[in-house]
Length: 87
Image (cartoon, rainbow, N blue to C red; front, top):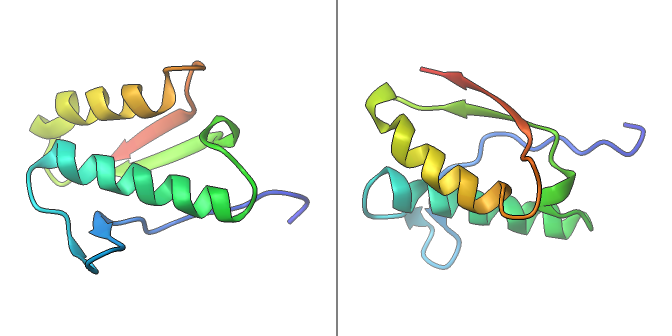
């Protein structure tokens, strides 16, 4: 699609084990973003190319912890992609 890559449905599944990553929201968010980086790498892209993220978070109380992981992953070298949240 004109050089655009769409990625959807990322879960906190560890590719090494095929199982959901144990732990809380931080551990699982780290795994999701690591999985995203692997998918992007397979297309020749990097996290700096991400323009938009939709986050589906079952419990809004987890938002601050998710923000910490998101900021560490995306904002270290740039402003970060636009994001919206679904509860």
